[in-house]
Length: 120
View 1 (tube, one colour):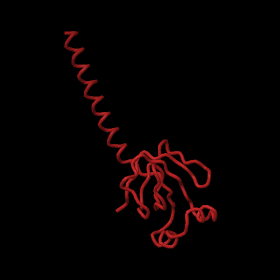
View 2 (spheres, helix red, strand yellow; view 1 turned 90 degrees about the vertical axis):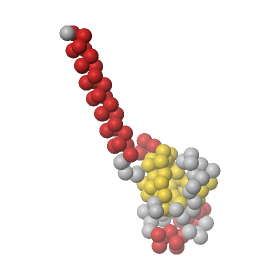
View 3 (cartoon, one colour; view 1 turned 135 degrees about the vertical axis):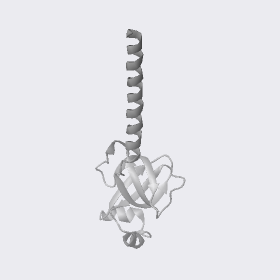
């Protein structure tokens, strides 16, 4: 009888663990992005992104050299390090999930992304 009770408890714990793992993986897919913005430059594994601008504002600045935009300091610019930039290009509006949710306070700011998606 003790052996049967032990097996039942083990089975209940196993099912509960599987349920909790399944719930936590669904929640991680539903976490909203930390940042959104337009790509101004793609270089190696680094993106220069302008945050908090509209498509119209992007069109006004897209041909201004990045150095000048940085010197002016009027935009919220971020350097994003990301390993998979092959499908990303200048002008894409993107959502960014920042590793650890941290953005460096330098100008331009900097962060490491663990996920980037193009907004269609």
